[in-house]
Image 1 (spheres, rainbow, N blue to C red):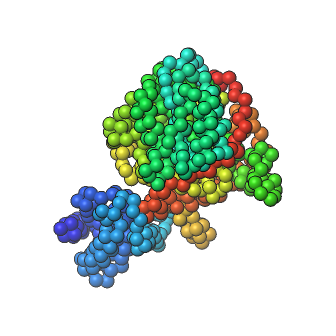
Image 2 (image 1 turned 135 degrees about the horizontal axis):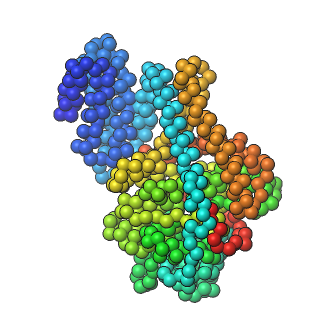
Length: 584
């Protein structure tokens, strides 16, 4: 029925004077969306599957229509496309009873990629100038928005007012800090001791540990709990599941606290290596009471960017010092970029997104009002989504949907200090998980319930940016070949150079921000650190594109296993905290 209706629509468009190719494309889009509404399957997976048939149809129709006529070409290609769609529906896009994230068969993994490649190849060969113009405009948009996100903090004077957060008074709200831990022997004792000594009269620290799986970290946590009775309470990770991830641990801790009748007004989340400032809870307590926010997101900052190997731990085994020197000097380029990502994200970009009301939260140093968590539980039957790879991103988007405001607090002296991943492969694995989690949240479509069009557009940009990075990675070799061999019109060439100029401006901005970072945190950056930041800017984007391609492939094939980031304590020891009140 849908196919016949599509044919009738195509005929009507032809009679209206449209070209056969345009008429075919229009009826194909309409028929696809009608089929989606009828079948009620997963949006992203369905459209990825249909992209294969669309590529075959759009690529073949102009060729066949000139030879055998529009209608014979339509029906011939319709039969082919229906066959392809049937195979994909059977093995991938609308499989019933095989689990939401079941692995796809090999043909289902390959066909969408091949179809998209065919569509891209046809577009490039048919309208190369137009394709170059569109791609250049998209990249220009991304470059401009990137600058806007990074510079938001400096737009108005009040963003830089040292007293804008107020002076915290005596804390009044009881709370808990949840600390999921797994195989964290190198950092657990330092973190828990630090958390147990914060300046707040009424809070608990709750490490969550799978005791049979991780007896070493469990022993450390219980030892700290004995030294701090009434302050540190160890929670056992559920032993009825083989899955290990952060949201399961957080939900287990909330269940334990409620079962024990513990009174709390806010819940904070810390990572195993986090170093909280002693006055952080005073600030959080004060901001909850004065702003009425449902969530307080405080700053997090990676610290170990420098190529100076003397501040890094010596690896175990033969040649440890030499390996430490080599690792420090060959990894500083991506570590500096990673450190600045956090610096820009927490002190500028998150504030803009909070002002608009689209908030993918940071995964730690984030504090939730109990009333918000209960509203979240009433909405979905749980607090944190145990199937989501970025539960922080999802809970932030849902908070925006429910109308809860987020107060973003970034004070240089009070940021939570962390370390970068231990190696470039570890960084890529971490970024793959984050990107795939954003894609998951995009595919679940909670953002569609945001109240304004501006919020929904920003949500698509933030959550869907991974697709752009993946496409950039796939098209990079093609773009290089086109740049070397194709002579585009002058106007298109000028448009194509604009994103490059703004990217160079972003690099200059990064150099300025690295200098500001060193002053704010009283650390030293060498000339080779600046050189690595500049020379590594493009390779860093290539690494992110590779991670985005990997994340997209994992999502499309239904793989959503959790990859843990190993912590080495490279950001230790903690510098002496400066007094409260020095704001970014």
